[in-house]
Length: 177
Image (cartoon, rainbow, N blue to C red; front, side, top):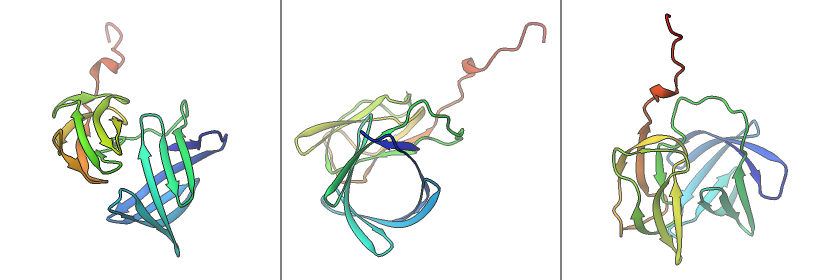
């Protein structure tokens, strides 16, 4: 994913190479970084990179990713109109709660086909409502929480499977072929 910090012209290529439990391998602008991410009860996390430990908080909205690390805070937005490599997988295989809160509404059902940017559910945290959106085309495989439920940070709320290929998107054969 290519991101840029709001108000800054620089772009950053960010890719999660591997994740196993708390262990992460990230590639940021071609440099691979090993880190550990441990969730905290308050909805934040502790990020360990090398010998450094940093408390972080993050929240994803439809158009941005907000990150607070120690006393610093940033807003990142996806770079639009970029040429990216084709991916055979899903943009995200699941939607997880970005913070602890109450699940107010579920806007999709199991088996529904969803498109990128489609609203999926509404979460209330700290007296604010946050709508979570689909990152790409997919099919809702399972819904793992009910409306009205309290959810923890990182709790998986929706699982996806790959969207079926759209036969109408293929070019038709010329007549007589």
